[in-house]
Length: 142
Image 1 (cartoon, rainbow, N blue to C red):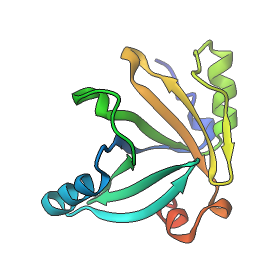
Image 2 (spheres, rainbow, N blue to C red):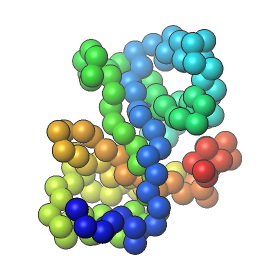
Image 3 (spheres, rainbow, N blue to C red):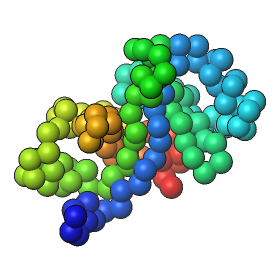
Image 4 (cartoon, helix red, strand yellow):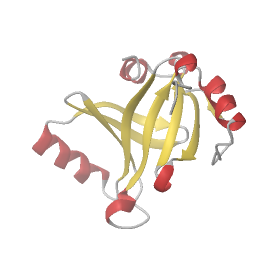
């Protein structure tokens, strides 16, 4: 590959893995006990209850719903925070990248889902601090 087509859209940061949780309280207890997880935010995001967790310098997000299968199907997607998401989407479309959805807008920000090679589901997202509760805005600020 030559160049970095995302560079003109601003920094892109791998942000989180998003997991399904059939028993959210049990999942949170497990990650707290064994890895020192700290809940950064628990609330409705894009219409669904989500819990955002920090483990050291990393992050996990949990959907309060059971996985669609066992094992690898428990990981829903990898989240990549993007500044200038609309510009990146335009460049991706122009390059023939098959996007799984249109840009979805919510008060909390906007996002788009797409498949990377080997069927890895990616969420490209750009949070809107003005539409977020303070704790969630702080969580997405770094």
